[in-house]
Length: 177
Image (tube, rainbow, N blue to C red):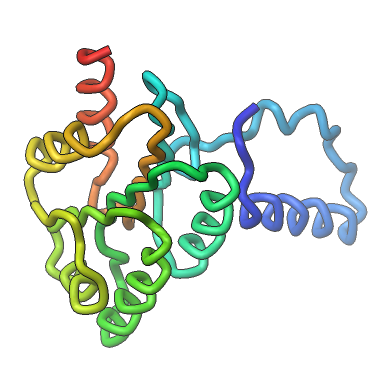
């Protein structure tokens, strides 16, 4: 069930090795079907021929790196990233968002959800297709830009609440059929 990215597999293996080292009975591997995919953590859905990846739970450079690597294997078609800020970076915010922008260069289009001003550092490195703080405006742009075979990746820190954009987009896709 679901699609695992490299980061999820590494976390699972670390947990298993820890249990093994502590001589705690290892759970059966068949339980893996019941533990993944976690909500909002690289959860892949297909809607009307559009592949949507919900990775809205949290954000870091490392998690984006493994996601970009997995996405390159999942889709050869058009790829759109809908991105919000990586929060709690303090003095490193500009540097972090510049690194994030570099990782996003593999996407055909990047849409920035501008509810936190730190996301604007991304636009210093790449030219986003669209920037807005309005859920409706971003959904409208996505509907115009997607077609069958498009992959749309949603990623931001939890505090950005990007899942609101994702849910509105899924509702619009369901309405449009």
